[in-house]
Image 1 (spheres, rainbow, N blue to C red):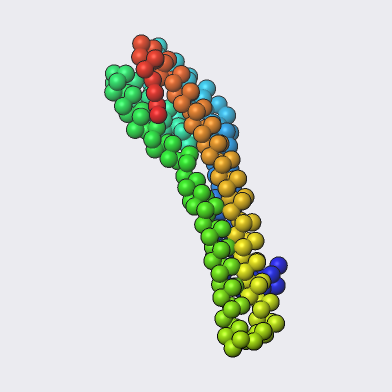
Image 2: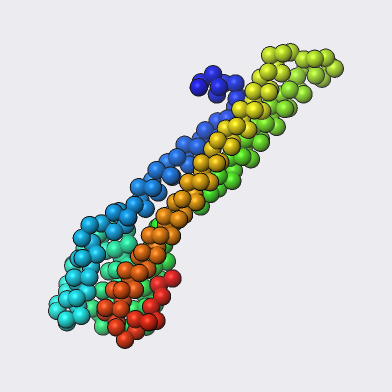
Length: 216
């Protein structure tokens, strides 16, 4: 492997750097977007249990609502609905706060996906750049300049730089693009699930306004 890196020349190093970044993003997002992480065990039961208590006009403390916000990455969204109801806000006021909270929640779900898409786009271009560098080394060799055949070692090195960088660029871009599409689908699925649970929670607390719920 090390000999391949040497044969590919210095243009391979930017590709290696973005490949490491891309792999780190894929691992982090795949872990973060797991359903058990977004909706931990018993978190929904706890949330809807507090909603039942609020609906029955039982006393629910701020500490209990704050605990809901700490249960999961989408906990602040559920806590927002509970807090607005406890504070006596109308359905319209609660919906406005919920929409603001939802935007920050969706950003957390989609975090780093833009960077992964950029890596998938940039990797082939960096590979093409390495190819151009290899071709420059071939045609810029002393033998080529003087009209001769050039050194075989120089020609081989230039061809290696060109081909290895092209291959590495595609090798990084294809998995990165596939991972981006998969992680984007996971993020959308988690968002839809969160929207549905939030709609149900809002419907329970604001039954008369349930049909107008839209957290997007």
